[in-house]
Image (cartoon, rainbow, N blue to C red; front, side):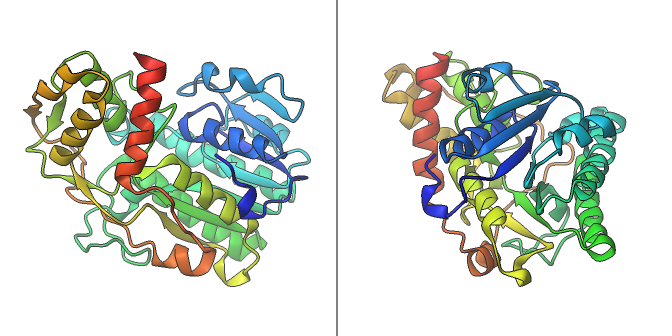
Length: 332
């Protein structure tokens, strides 16, 4: 993604934690393409070496194989860094339900290590991946940043604790941060394999194999699916923001429209069917609802538009076409 229009100084040194993951590796690419120096910190628990293999020969790119659960690794990664884009986490609601202790260790203790290391290194700003799961059982739509409910999973708790810690560090140490509540991000490099694969790449792979995609529930649950390039834009805007009133708070990162799972499968069949007409005849199967799932998710992005100048270029359909093209080229 070309980010030159977002006025990011080319001389910055930016740390991307989880830089070999889906979102992190896309951020690394965009930042390097803009002429920035990038350090990637990853332990490859969920990140993929293939995602960053082509970056290793770039003189502006440095890989540190380390773990955010180690304060020493965090301190090493933060040396001489201007900004931190903290993407490292153990995602997935089901994973956190199956193993809440590890999710907490990574997402809470690891987050605190990064805050301390970044504070001590005097980085200019700490931008971190928050989550729409923080809205929990709140039934109000669209989701507005100041109105949340009770968390519905250990994962949601960990991401809310991140926001609380960032706020305390702002108040106590004068440490500048911005939290980005991601809403169902999808796009190139998102892993379709594994027990905790996100729904879009998982469905894509099933359809490409002419296997019925398995929908949890009756397909009426809806999400504000958000294309990766919109997420990259928000991270860069969070770095470049000079408005003091826009700092030390959280923002929804989404497009602001929702799609239910039945619609999603229909669109995937249509777009993939352009490459393989047989896919259009594959019918979905339905299973039980997942524990901890929120029925509906729709973001208000007015705060991000007003304070950060957020202007997402990809709606769900245009982003999905881009993603399908990438999967067909890279995974068939």
